[in-house]
Image: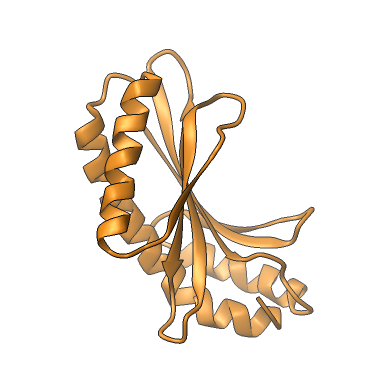
Length: 155
């Protein structure tokens, strides 16, 4: 997918978030990434907790690209690190979409889902698919968030 098409798709996603009063921001893309990263702060509890969703498109090969949905649930896992790591294994077995992990240098607890799509996909269609996938990932993240925070010890 060309950079202009990725931008069109990401702008459509940003508009969907803004209609829901969800705060968004842009982050410069990294190596092998097409365009910028769209970030969104998604409310995950009624008490005001949020998770950070990052949406990006990466090149896989000349025929396929990857839509990458990366959600940070806990920026630095607390004293319950080992227990959360063990519990995460069960959540991964039960997760209908994506997987949980802990990024070691920062101890960030995250959920990640990567969706391959053809390079010639239409931006509008991909935006619709991305919105659907974001909703499904959100359901998975929201289901474990309170327990993850409890196990971690802080967030």
